[in-house]
Image 1 (cartoon, protein in one colour):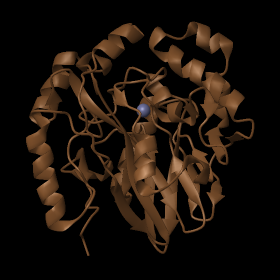
Image 2 (cartoon, helix red, strand yellow):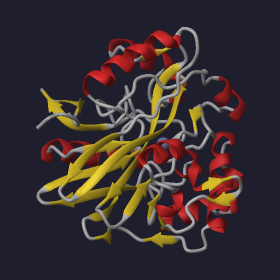
Image 3 (tube, protein in one colour):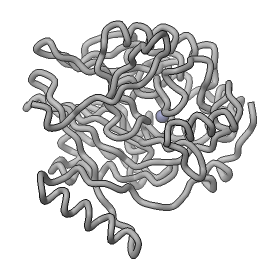
Length: 328
Ligand SMILES: [Zn+2]
């Protein structure tokens, strides 16, 4: 596996801001989107994308912390040329790689607010927009009752820390026990490549700043209708979250699926995956099951709002984007 320094990682990421607004409605939205497009040539326009769906009694809001473009050589199992070719074929090629969004999901039932993942908070690419997205919704960090972190990579837990402090002071924090053990183990840290050091450092800080952290074991219900799904593989304690009510369900699968390369193949990986065999086993198990069930999926790095399904199309797995607005 090639070794990349953090500097190389950061310098490969372009400048720019998110385009396209999902705020507002109807004609006004169309008009302002057009205005935004015209303005882009003169000055960057900052927008806050939000998308809401109902799952039974739950409102799930997709938020995003921003994006980064991942160089084509960050996908072990395929050559950079193969990944680029696939991106070109899907009309998603960017000058410096595969665009990764960093989506988070806020789950509300009228009583509680549960945030799934906390974003990269500026530690990768053009990120750090989650606080603004929550503010746009009218939600303050101290109104979040629980944060579920799907795994301890920097792009999923970075936003737990703001200015060296605990950013969600009233929240219970749920992280799988295996990830807490892995990412706070000095021996694992010493043996890890440079590009994972930020995650090790952050993990230590998170554990220190969140003394009420709940290191959870296996599949369990967090609150009625919101439960943990074991998706070990991407990291030792990589988990998903199932939201279920009234015959409807959504499963947030975090880094089960990466854009361009998944779910069409399971023998292609992301650079951060330290155990490719485990990552492959995870996807070999999950993709066919998701296709069979037609499960509605939310995925961190897929194009915003990250909602879709894995479908088996003449024996080939592919990602089918799900409708999420104006469907009634
Ligand atoms: Zn990730």
